[in-house]
Structure formats: C-alpha cells, structure tokens
Length: 430
Image (cartoon, rainbow, N blue to C red):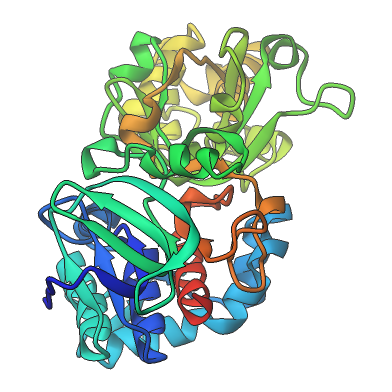
C-alpha cells in the first residue's frame, strides 16, 4: 500500500470498496495523481464478507444480460458495462493470479473460495499503476472552492481529521447503508445533498424476511433448492394470485428457513418490495415448494402412489418430494395424520395438502433491514448523473460510482459488477 503526505492531487476517491478500488486503478492508469481514502482499517471490508467470505465477483453472462437484470436502471449502466464488461473484470483479477470458477447458478467465485484473494488482487491492480491508498482516513466534509487554487488547478477541498486535501476531481464511492458494520453508513448521501443532489429514499434490498410462525421457525436450517415466493397483499393471498389480484413480486430460487423467518436468493430478491413500502402491514408471502410441478400433476402423483403403494404413509410419500421435516410440518398444518396411508387420503385432504405445498401463506413481520441487507436500493437520483462518464450534472468535477447511486440488482454478482464498472468509468473520466 502506497501512502503520501502530499496535499495536492488530481483525483481523490473516497471509499475503498469495489467501486473505489476500480476507480483508483483506471484513473491512475491514465497518469492521474490519485489518492484513495478509506475510513476503515481494512480495505474492501464488504468484499471480504461477501458471498459468505468467498466473494461472488460477477455473473457468468454478457454486459447486456447484466444490464437487463437491473430492469429500468440497466439503461444507466450501459456505458459503464461497455467500458468494463464482466469478462474483463475476470481477466484483470486472474492476471493477479486469482483463478476463478463458474458455479451452477452462474455465480463466479475465486477457486480459492477466499474473498481476501479478490480484495488483494484489486489493491495490487491499482497500486501497480501508481494509486496512493490510505486507510483509517475518514472524510469529514467536501467543499468546492469558488476559485481554482494550488499548482494543480484544484477545485475541491477534502477535509479529514489529519489534513485538508486539494484536488481537481472527486469520486465518491462510499456505498449505501447496507451492512453498516462495514462502515457503509450513508456518509456520501449528505455530501451529495449539500451539492444540490436529490436522493431516492435509501432502503434495504437483498435482506432476509422475518416471520413469527412458530412451525416455520422450527424448520431453521432447511433449504429448498428450488422454490417460488410471491409477495402479496393479504386479500390477494386469500383470493389467489390473478390478473386482478397480482403479486407485488415473484421470485424463484433457493429458499432457506431460519429461526427468524426466511433467507436464500428467492427471498432476498423479493425483499425490496417490502422495504420500499412505508409499512409491512397486510403483507404475506405465498410459497410454492415445488414450482416445477403443477397442482394437477402433484395430485396425479399422489393418486398413482395410492394405486401402486397404497400402504405407504402420507408422510413417507411426501418425504420423497420435500425434506422430511418440512413434509411433516405441512402434513400437520393440513390436519392429516402422518401415519395415514396414501390409499386412505380423501379428495379434500389431498386438496388441502397440495394447497400447503403450492400456496403456503406466511404472514410477513418485516425484514432484518440494513443490518443484514446485501445492498441498498435508492440513492443518488440517476437523472442527476451523466451515465456516459459518471460525473454530476450539477457539479463539474464531482463523480459518483457504486452503491451510492440509485442502482440495485438481484443476488448473484450483479451488484459487484455494477460497482466495478461504474467505478472504472468514473476513473476514466475524473
């Protein structure tokens, strides 16, 4: 890590996360005198804890697919992704000796399963081209001078506890408010607002959902590899999902029961529609534990089983489809004796059980919020930032990249890719 006592810089970057480290590399690579400031003792703290400390670097797809995953926000990312697409991120990291692998979900991880290796590679990339990086350097304020000052035609003053630094351009990569224990406490929002920027209200995204149903909480640790969850109004849950009563959001993927509620990719991806509402009152989650099978097909399976293995218990039969503990819970919820033989299952009992499997209604209490959110939804309004260079449309020389922007995507490496690409593009233009 390189440090310097100089107070005059071409570019100062605030926040040494995924976006900041990439911005430092691209700006330094252009010959700019760059200082990257990080308030934590460790660099890239969120990188280090991501993916269960394995770091899901990006997703195995092209730039257009990354943009598409962000919905309407994806239009803003096109220039950044063109400047640094997923395959280039992988090339850069592998050039530092960190071999990567693609898992069955499309997620890309280091073969070592060590996020430290990814973080260290990013630091080396920037340091090699001359970026100066200083940790334990929190920024108190940013101000723009009315007149250029200093030998480098500086326009901004960066106030830290140790010094007042001067620079021509500032790149703010302080992140959002997710996992505040990492130091992402929304510092950059107040600076942006002081410069006249407006915010889309920051809310937690990709955060676990809470539920107080004891039968579900007792299933903690059980994972359903393929489930479908729909967030619905309580009335919709009672009436069923139709065109007139649509779900607020529907997601499919891995589902995890926890002691407080639910997690896993399907749940995390659906959580943003909950956190964006002023209240969670009246919301439920409809769970389909076998989305690859229709209710009719499931009923036929049980009927065929009754014909071929009529003495088999309902509990044993359902355990062939679902984890044993979940099967038992759904049978109890259906008020069916687990010892009941498949041939003895009545039509109404079968309908009740299938409803428990395919349309299980779980009242939502809330979420674990920013404390456990993987990303922040909301942030600096995209209409106020030039997507072609990441420069503020309000303040020349001020750039934003990464999670501080109103850009949030699904789980699977998409958000890291957005951070890498926007940081890189900002550095190319600052």
